[in-house]
Image 1 (cartoon, rainbow, N blue to C red):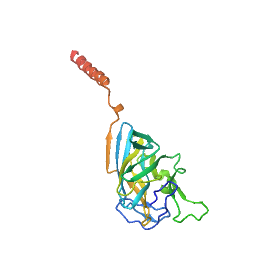
Image 2 (cartoon, one colour):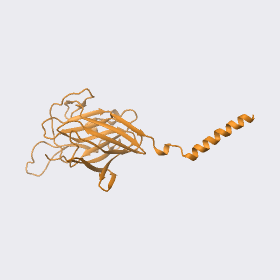
Image 3 (tube, one colour):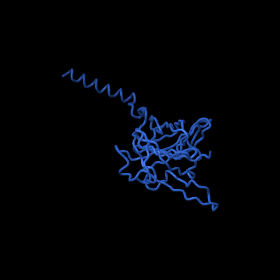
Image 4 (cartoon, rainbow, N blue to C red):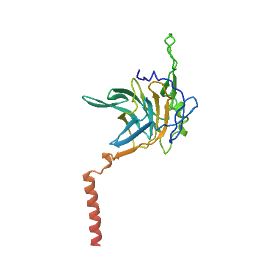
Length: 242
């Protein structure tokens, strides 16, 4: 099997099985459902958030996904033998499943211009060396930005697979973001490994668990606590003298 690239994502059309979760619109207008295809947890501490994502759908790869938030920046954490680093691109592996993702911060400025998903005709090159893949922005996938975000959210942290993607049954926690506290729903695209089933568009999935640790800067310093205590004590003493 040839792993996907952002320039080589297969066009896979067909009927998608249903689930109880919110429906999404398959590109081309055909109805689609989530199929319980993706689950994720979310954690946040000291300015860094983390999505730990599980591809629940067998015989598929996670072509791309985005999580809504407020004023955040999407990034990838790559772990190597010598340590880890966080950049706008990166990847890792689960066993023999190697993957690499690009991180895009999508907001009002690039909603209609940043390409998030590329479909390529499911036919061999005609020999001329040219492909005409269909490219989709957030505007193409989800419609007008004013109708997409809710609860004050204004950012879609998007991760597009390139030269490898997370296979069905695998979990990875290298999808990170910088910014405010979590406020999130996930939107994802899973494609069939062998083109035997339809592409699944997962829509509006909420995290199964959220763990939030307050930022260190929000904890009063010991000196500040001492001054506060002295102020309260002084007020009590003055009242006793009156």
